[in-house]
Length: 326
Image (cartoon, rainbow, N blue to C red):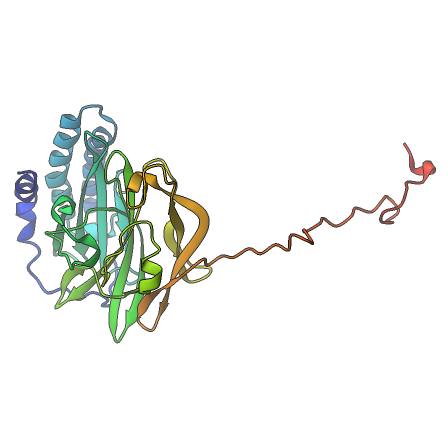
């Protein structure tokens, strides 16, 4: 029933998503006139009030009611010519992720539900100048039986709040790796490394570009289903976990997870970071797994020592001259 409600709310949008987009095409931000900027600023003010209700209201009913009011008003704002160039900075719940060529943007947000879980909402807005072209994202996480090895579409989306997007290429194809957060449930969280690409101009989520050796996958404290189309890391609700691209080392870094044995292996509430890090490196057209990427080795027989400090005369390890005493 909840998916029917979502479809009804987004239904007016689907008529704008019938064209042929081309992911990766060189694009520029559309022109935004002053009059249209003013329209968007006025819409942004109204959306911001609804966003605060969605984020802060203590009533689950009021949060969801604000969300279902927010969606059509947001779509009306996106219909304003040049809206792609407007960042909606004052709407605190929105995350907007762009590829380098600004050919599209992925917009996501989340609403907390009763019981400690979240519902995710979003859309892909293509950069079509004055023409609006949207692909609404319908969160079907609860009904996706095998999220790790399934190709998905905007209408059947593994819902997440995306906080980063990077691009990779292989055999002339562009992949947009998305990093996201899924609140999952009262006891556990999930970090998501999903892949967006375009087939005949239409967005597809998931791709067979993850390479984790079977011997490594077997050591994970949660099941890793292969072949992987997206990478999920499950962990305890109050743990802090990193999963993101490190531009300095040109790798994706994430916390290595272990079970604290309190609840047993394969139960997310028992999974916590152990202080080490694993990684993915883009190589030969795949995200290849690297174990224990940052290794710190200390010779316990020769621990590191600080350099001695000189006295006022520049001498090291010398008794002070009595004449130097204050």
